[in-house]
Length: 446
Image (cartoon, rainbow, N blue to C red; front, side, top):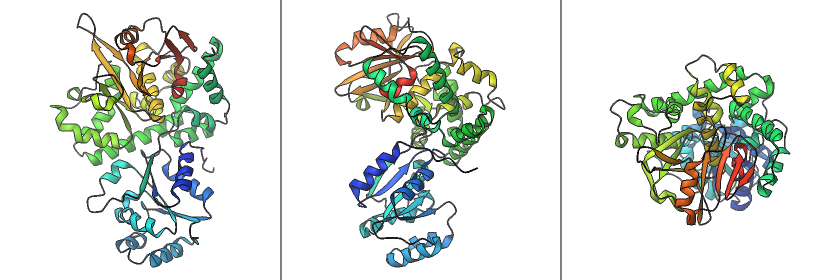
């Protein structure tokens, strides 16, 4: 059966690059493995150019890679590429894709001269962590426009299922603060929980569409998780990165105010893993949310690098990772999630879904904690985003909304800094005073 090509939002940014830059830079699509970078690059080249050559450096022959050891004669390089790939290149109407460019660092270094030559457009794909590990002996080209591809967001998932109507209608309802009605809200939450289960990895989505079998989807996700674990073993043969990765659900389940390295790694100290954590974040597999010591605009300037939470780039993978101790994430778990029967200690699944949605919309992730009056417990705002010269606190709940003490206390404490305040939960859209209560599937509209 033929591969399904999914519509991706990043395509519009690629079009803008082509029209605005007109070959003055190469386009580098970075992101985690298996998010669809290669497929998107080739689909774009196929649709937007008269012809293209796709060089996959993971299996390109040595004769092709060797072309980039000496780039003094570009005519020769272009001749041999056309000869090898049996493609005629047309000046200013053709593209050359450097797929998995990290596997041929000299090709990436050649971008400077290739762009200056201006005959063709160039699209590179690669995992940032792999790219970083293969640049020691090359000069990094400044002639690159970099964009990041994340797993499919909820709207892209709905597109894949043939639904182009729901999300625009929900956006209008959110903007106008129109209640959906309890019955509609329940159905829409069930639809969103299906997205949470399948996730946004294109292979998992394609498997679901073709089989409608969550057990097969789960097996697909386990393969991706093991692929990521293997990648982390490569950057850290001691296994620390892999243990940190595997422990993400457990750390969130503890409802602690930060990820505690010392509880995962023996003799684990923050100053010993900073570079490792940066590599993991660069992989785009994990999402880091840093503590905002001073919750105000410019939170990056006041974030604490030693206090953070970690989420996965994809909630579907997160759910499978959380139950990796079983051979298969059982139907009971899936049915409970679909039917809103999750126990309270699994509410962190929704936090991961919110983190994924906020990141997909271009937000950096921050949270804030502070001690309550007794000093024995902490208040916590799950996420903070900035809008203009104000901030928006977000509290996430997996069920009801009657208790939101942290959000109320924070709003009173920092009233002058706040634009909108949100409680994201599993019920209908409503407004309660100055607080907007929105179903979690509306996170993308914040």
